[in-house]
Image 1 (tube, rainbow, N blue to C red):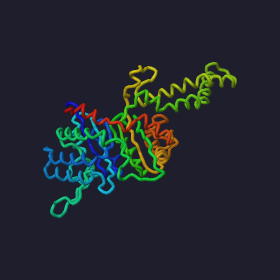
Image 2: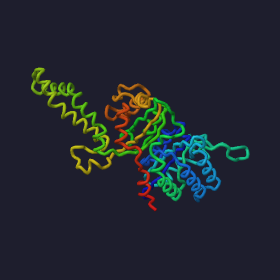
Image 3: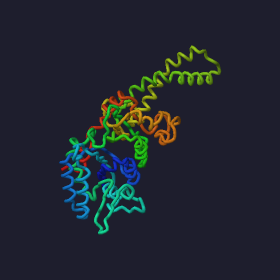
Length: 388
């Protein structure tokens, strides 16, 4: 069976209740599909009305359910009627064989089986009935396509508004205001995407205890050029900070090889000569880890093209966001992190340490300018599979 492109819309209530990580983890670990794009939307009234109308007309679903979902969208997706501020909706795109039905099965029925927790709606959704059987309260957690036609029509509609209504949602209804508000970048690194697992979602779950809001999301394949720019400050540190370690290792090797002790002046000369080269090698390893390419072997064209590896870029916003996120992330070396910190739970070593987070306001601005979370990747993916 040929690959398909499927979607999931994480509803505003699920996002506000910090269920985003759990939902992403379920989709990734239980479908085996590849997460290829993510984008935060703040749907306009126009998009909401057109989406609700589309839901009412979709032929693949029960007419009663269509009406319930359309009313739900009008009520919960639309901008706040009092402030006019938008609500956050996170769109995820998944690619793979039979993707539409895989996403639908993992999502589950609108009437969840509360005894099993087997599907996303079993765990994160609610469907409460009145005594006469009419719905009293509904929270479907996510919205997905019921079949290929519904998926195609929905994605074409949202792609039409992706540039206008998506990106960084700075006017979301549930964002805090104040002089201490910051934005920070988090990268969930490639080691979490080597095979389908709940790891990316579990990491987001740990960050959710910050109380901060995700205002932007993007699946990003970092180019070599971007990686060298992003980690450029690290290169200078590696070329100087490692001098003592490099000279000590070189002296031990010389002592063992020649069976004699060399003077301290030799140690210093070795450090001066070898450290820049060793630092560059360590820098290239970082770039290869993030991109899948060894920089010295890349042509000019290869340096600019998207890398082989992917990460999930998230923008968090709220009071003291940079310090708060760094506290949950933990130190660069996972061995020095404490229980409950991201790198203690999911890191392996100094490089393969699960996630990155900006360490200052200046670096947050610099890194966000490189990654460009606001860039629209939804429309290109939709046009690839569902071009008019």
